[in-house]
Length: 417
Image 1: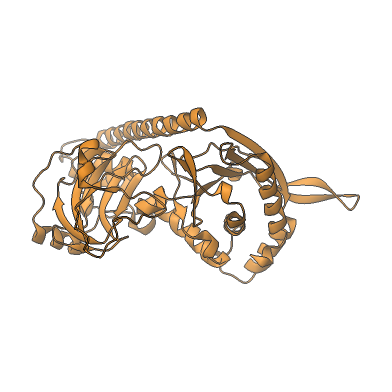
Image 2: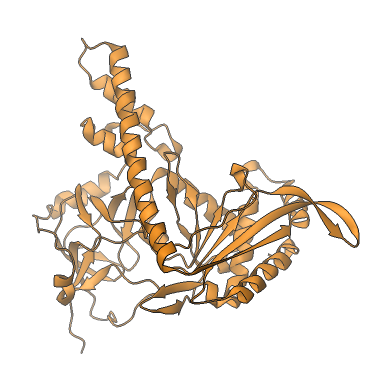
């Protein structure tokens, strides 16, 4: 009979550029039973509010940290008693952020604080939820002592924007203050907070990419792909669709890459602990630019098992939730390869920096018209430059070149995707 052991729930690392995070809300109370994959807390990073998931099935035994506390990655937040039938020796593709208690002395310690009353916590969970808001808005709200729960957001899905915060802040001011002065002060404070947030995010991203370039031996390949057939096929498919149901080129590219990756395992996985761990699933990370600046790289899970229509829906979903601050922790931690596109910014190509511990990143430039020779004739084609940056410890140029050639061939037959 297996002895039950207590696991530590720790502050997760939600990306190579994350150093700490703020616990903003518990979604569980002591004594609650949770299943693997259930959301148990909301963590705020410099990129947004992320729903932290449980990596085990069991009962929450202790909550050690009060909400609105900032802690480093690895700090202990709570304890969970796994169910008796849980196989502690089984691991997922991504290491779980909960660790066995005997290892606790090896990680940063959080000072235990009184856990919230269970009845109150359960009531709070049923009556309220964390408002959708960016890190800049949350920082401003704390500085101005505003309760986001009482503010109606005007952004996507009710997200609270800076203008909503400004209105609430102005309404809170004393009646003898000049409205123009209040507005000027609010705008200045907003700008300063935004700049500080962007500076912190740029520093974190820079540190992660510096480490990647220093430790990973990159090699780079580039290939121009004729997308004339694919573009015409997309136009035909979208002819009878409403705008919100139309298929976009990025979804077609994700689908093509996902279909090929099982045949090129050296590009799909992680380099860690001195060796390569091939991923058994295809989770494609998609770089998304945030409106306040910076990037997020959420993953589309099991992308090789999705239809093209489902891929389009998944892409729209993670794009919206990235910008409204409601991603799940697994979406930021288990991407097996990353795709980045800078084509909408007018560049022909982009050579990405590998996002550790991944071993490859694909870059897509702008779709442009260029002359190509076909059957001894010059034709004007819709051309896309695709680049591959890969880890030389795991693959080499010939493998990468075969992948890009196969991707080109795949995109010539969009109806097969």
